[in-house]
Image (tube, rainbow, N blue to C red; front, top):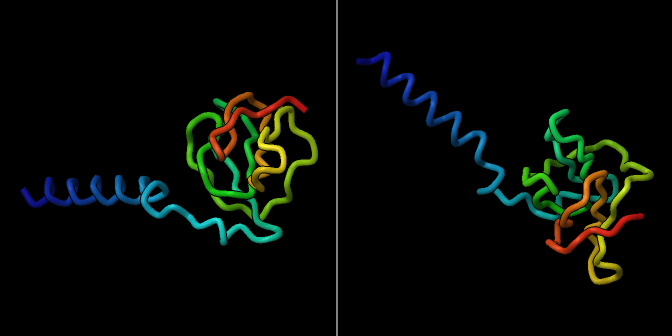
Length: 105
């Protein structure tokens, strides 16, 4: 019985750990001059999404802070023009962090 209790606690802890991205709402302030938010969806997607604001990727995953340098050229960019400063870029078509359609570069 004790073993099942430990398994239950481990499963709940893992669920809370992996779902904290939605609950924490990483502040835009954490993205400084050299900080960008990127998608780590892996090889199954290869969207290469990055933005200067926290939000969702074109594939629906949460973005994570990163210290890597922003990509120079990607196929799509934020279509907000001068309305915002999210600077979303991706190799896949979809919506930017501001939930507006991205345009082809």
